[in-house]
Image 1 (tube, rainbow, N blue to C red):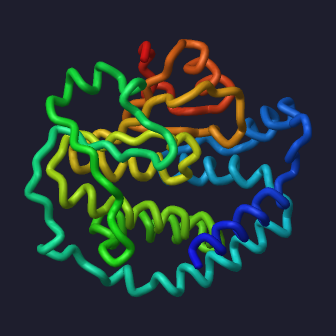
Image 2: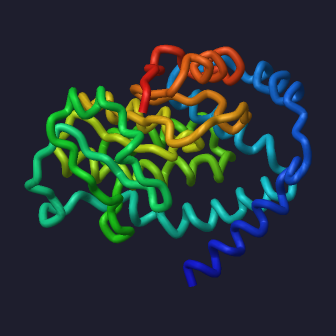
Length: 252
């Protein structure tokens, strides 16, 4: 059943794209990104990220996404009252944890700086659906997003989903850093960074392949983002309005 829903999602997503299989108008991208309000905090960063993401899609897809999100939020309402269960706590200690992407390995691209700084890096998986919940800080961020953007149902569902995934990791692993990759399109990354940093944890990512200019990368914000060359830093900061202090250049 999950595979069928995923195929339906991919079909409507690609059908809804403005410039699918066409040469994109980059000048329009740059004009659009400059019309967005300068973020005051990480909720604003995530909102601008979402605006950049949805720029690619036609109106009917945006309406459909919001309608589906309303149903998903209602169905997920009990999760708001779910609490961490002691039996799911982990006794393993690690200076950093890393989440392996399903289709990309990380061993040959993991920055040495991370390996040198954090002695033991533990590979973990995201929690199962039945174990997902919102920690106290995540609830506060989620309700603040709803307060600011009450009709942005799709955005709020995306934030809710990611906050549920990472609340358990933050609570269950006493770690100094959560390392991810293949996350440069994650709308919730700025809010997740803020949530981690409140707990004294760094939310770190690194390049896993070459990047060309894409509007969907606009307004990225992590605690640290390791890139392969200063060219990428300049592109992300100057063209895509990403937070400038996060970037560190390294050679994989």
